[in-house]
Every structure is written in C-alpha cells, then in structure tokens.
Length: 492
Image (tube, rainbow, N blue to C red; front, side, top):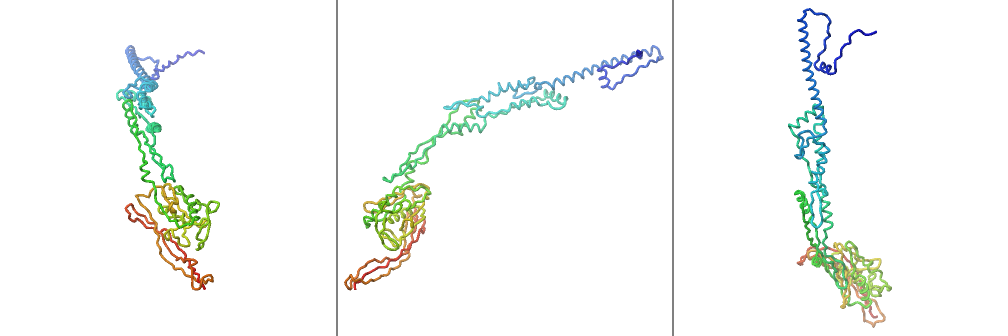
C-alpha cells in the first residue's frame, strides 16, 4: 500500500555540521492556520528571510573554517623545510631534506674535507685522510624535524612562528682526528728516522791488549710535533704546503767516550824466578788457558772449570806442591801461584769473591793473607763479575819470570782504585826436633827440614779516590797457616 504520508526532508551534511556547531535544532512546522492573515504572512516571510541570511553567513564561516583546516594540514605535512629555517646562512625554505643533504655533501663539505696539504718530499694529504668530521647530517635533520611533533595546531603554530622567529643553525666541524694525525706522522717518522749509532766495544784483542771498537754514527729524526702543528695551520688556512724538519741526532757515546771509560782496570804480578823448569812450565800452561777469557756481566769465573784437571795428558808436569802441610811432588805443582796472582787482580778489579782458600803453609811469592790455593775437585777460586759490563782477563809469564795478570773493561768510577793489603795478626813459633844419625860424625848436625812458623792473617780490600784518599776499608778474608817443625839430624 502506497505510503501517502509526506516524507520528512533530511538535512545535508553541511547543514548537520552547521547545526552541530551552533547547536541549532530545526523546528517542526505546524499545519494550523493562524489568525492574522497578511500580518502573519509578513512575519513569516521576515523570519524566513532572516533564516536565509543567517544560513548564508554561517555557511561562509563554515567554508572559512574548512579552508583554514586544509591550510594547516598543507603546512604541517609539507615535506620541505619550514619557512624561516637556515643552516650556515643558507635559506632552506621549500627544500626537501634529501635535497639539502645532497647539496651539503656535494657542494659544501668538500670545501672542508678536501682541503689538501702538500708535505714536501712526501706527497699530499687531505683533511679527509686525517679523520675530518662534520655533523652536517644531524644538523640538517634537526632543522627539518623541529616542530614536527605534537598536535596539528601545535605543529602549525611552530611552523608559522618560524617565520617571525627564524631558526639559524651552525654545522660543527673537526678538521682532523688527533689519533689519525698522530698515526700519519708516525708512519712518516718510520721512513725518515735513522737511529744514531754509539761507539761500542766489538771485541778485545788479547795479543795487543786493546779493545776493538765500532765507530759512532750520527742519526736523524723527524720533528713530529712541529710537522703536526704545520699541517694543522695549513688546514686551517684552506690548504697549502709544509716542509718537514729533520733533525740530526748525535750519538751518545763516541770513540773518545769509550776510550775514556774502558781500559785496563788493574794488574797484579808475582815473582816465579825461583821456580824449577817443571813448575814454570805448569804456570805457563795454566796462564795460557786463561789468557783472553771474557767474563760476561753477571757470570762467575771458576779456576777449576777454566783450567781443568791437571794431568800429564793435558801438558802438566810434576813439580813441588803443598799437600797436608808437607811439600810433595804433584802433577801441576806451582799453579797455585797462577790462582794467587789471579785472586789479587780480581779483588783490585772489584770482582765479587765467592770462593777462596789459603795454603796450609805460607808461600814466598805473596804477602800472608793474599794467597789463593786451588786443588782439583776440593779447592777452587771463584768470583763473579758485577761491573755492569764484560771484563777480559789477560795474563802471561814475562821473560823475567814474573806472572802477570790484568783485567780490562769498564774502569772504576771517578778514577777510583782498589788495593789488597795483607796483615799478620798472630805468629806461632815452630818446634825443633833433633834426630840422632849414625851417618854423621859425632857432634855434627844438619837441618833436614826447615821449620816454618804458623800465622794468622787478614786481608783488607781498600778503595781509594783519584787523589789518593782512602774511601773505604773492608775485611775481605782471614787465613790460618800451620807451623812446620824443624828437623835436625845429629851425629852420634
């Protein structure tokens, strides 16, 4: 069945926005006839006219409101920098972030990063090579993203206010990286630097008793600090050229220095002129095994290790020697004069004495307390080199039958010297024994064994300055020598 009722007229979306905005509700029309005739009709027409005028005005306001909203959206969602934005004095309004980045990368930054310094004799180096750094990317991004957070109105106000309060940003640049620059200069120095060569002892000639030296030689060194300063100054001025300064480096030790510091430290001598031929031969054999020996710093010398066992197969002969307080014939007899002379020289060379033994009886070739007895596997002479450098031991038997030892190496400091002094502290008389003999005429006598007194002695190590003043006196060792009774045969 057809619906004969009149359909209700619906308002348009614009009308709804208008009504909602202003809270105006349409009134229902009534079909009642109203009294008043023309007057009422005039009133109605006026009312309608006013409504039409109001609708027109409010519609204009709505259209303006719509246009303002669209403008806000257009401004805040633009993918370009807001008006009033500049970086390093360059206006970025209307430019995209990508375009600005490309402009800085291709047109701005190379002016700084590609600044070139020519190092004379080496080549070119740029700020980029030396670790140039720039924060232009973060600055551009900050300039573009400023004001793009918050509500639509907040972003719009930020964009609009930029026109009245411009944003002006600066790019921070570092023309170099300190570590990279240091590495560059170090690499150049490795190519340029030549260390100076000091004069030094190469070897020792025991025949001529002289040191063989290596010559000193000057070196060169790049002035790295100055080169860094010059490079930085050139970069600051946009580039340029610099000349490296290479300095001469003098050796610290010259031949003259070595000759003044090294030489014969000391010497010692004993008299072997009363020796038999076999005894003298043993002395010469032992001396030949020691001559030219190099004792390294910190090493210990052992007489028995260096000379070795005394056997006829090794060239030693039978000669008088002390054994158990008696004089006997032994292979190698007489070499204690070698060890004694060496002991005296070692003390005067300031060696550290580690082992030393006195003879059972006194000997005639050295003062009491200054001898050094050796015996294979039971008694040794040992000393350690604490001089701070190598020492060379030279020795020989001269034509006048003197046993001579000398130590060569670093001289004692300040011209000092050392002496060894023996001092007898006690003397013990020997006893005399008389033995009857049928082989001698009655009343006659002869000495079979000479008596030897016993002694106690001390040896002192005395240090002197260059002017002969005593600096110190050290008790080095003590010795006890036995007595030997005198034996006399008497005819009966």
